Length: 99
Image (tube, rainbow, N blue to C red):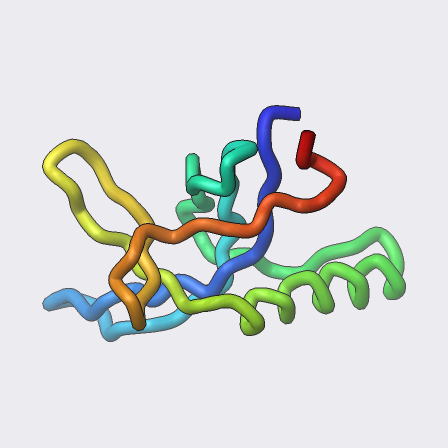
């Protein structure tokens, strides 16, 4: 494994055709905690059993414990930044992945 992921709330700004909205997305990070990718569409809980569905719902809820992000266009591509600080989004590397 070359990284980790978590759920994050991403704010999508209004366009001329659509209203602003918030969605929970899967965000992937490298082993330094830097964002490498995020899901194009919002996440939805799922499971093969009710217990698995509940566990996935709990993981989705963890997104509310972290700063809200938004997508910002860069000269070459896009990046995720924290809405409040404007700083590039990062995440704490899980202890199990620290060397």
